[in-house]
Amino acid sequence: MFTDREQERYERHFSLSGFGMEGQTALRNGSALCVGAGGLGSPAALYLAAAGIGRLGILDDDTVDLSNLQRQILHDERSVGQPKVQSASQRLTNLNSDVCLEVHPRRLEKDNIMALFRQYDLILDGSDNFPTRFLVADAAWLLGKPLVAGAIHQFEGQLTVFDPALHSPCYRCLLPEPPPPGTVPT
Image (cartoon, rainbow, N blue to C red; front, top):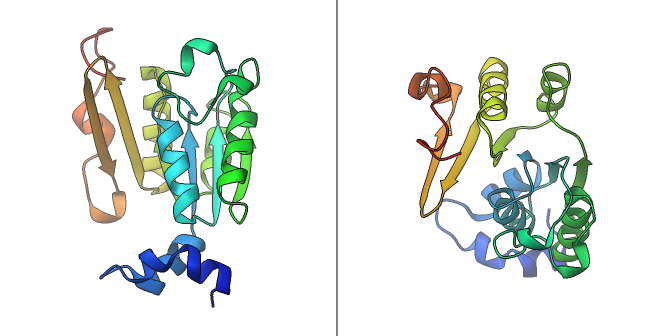
């Protein structure tokens, strides 16, 4: 059941053919982890929160810098110097206070990634380096988690979904080893 407030908020979702109340219920009951709260993670987190994801994790160990603000739309001038996860949490709570936000102000490491990823239904990778990308992709694949991987380099962007449940290829199927710097978007 949806409250009157939720019915008003998501009325356009309810009217979408193939989504409707069933899709909104699945979204509300779902969870996602955004790895990175920068240029790629910012819009992903905003749209997930606005759409009404039930639980959203934001992982980033960086702080907001003034030079981030022309592309990292989750943050603003008041955020400069703050941890990105703190800035993200404030903005996303203001956007949709019904979303359960979980902040992870740390770097992904081999010793913490599996336990963290087990807590979420979907992983979104907005990281900006290949060691992290490979770590994220390998862990998501081993756990059978769908992974949405975005990459950008100057004026070029890529978006790919890897889903073991759909028997799709894995990240390493496309890139077995990290490519030389600057040749492929991160």
